[in-house]
Length: 274
Image (cartoon, rainbow, N blue to C red):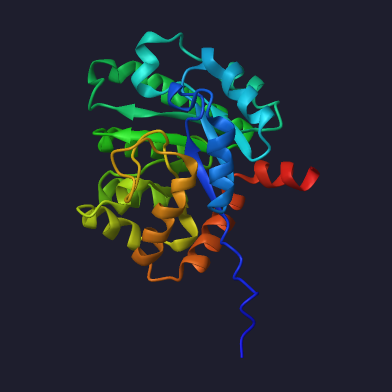
């Protein structure tokens, strides 16, 4: 006879990429973070996409124990923002909760006219990641060939660590990233019914190189598709992802926690010290 008073602990999960400084969360952050905790989301990394906003993003991380932050210039903003320097990025990493470089990358879907300046910015961010040892956070859209080429060229110049955030590109770019030892992150897109080709790309990847994220407030997974995304919903993405890998959800969640700890090692160091 089982003891019905004993309940299985809720699997812990990490939202490795969200944007908590966006207006969508104004005056609602404590509630959103509480809902995340109730869903088993123990940590989240909020991403600064324009360095002039880094003070706001850093303050969110300082005010909320589960929140860490990363900073960089988003490729779609590069043309309109001052070009960041390696030294600026490195200086930001002195903060104990600054745990990643980016997001950076290439986006030729909306901003192909700035491809040259995007590539310059990307290489600057890579250099900062290489020098600090923090993971690079990559946004890639409609730029697979250039992305694979630059990531590979720069890796030959010196090793660095990287996650392909919200990966939804080609099998070829996935393979190029995995061959360099990088990680692929699963967003709500992977839970959409018509994303079977994308799920196949992930299913072919090593399970120890997988992260999960929301990219909140964007890309809410079912059953919240079309609504504002928030960190709590990463559990829905992870539950669908567990099916992709043919794993029980608790096992998949535990594996992605290990993966996150390995890549974002500054987070685990901070947690150990506090």
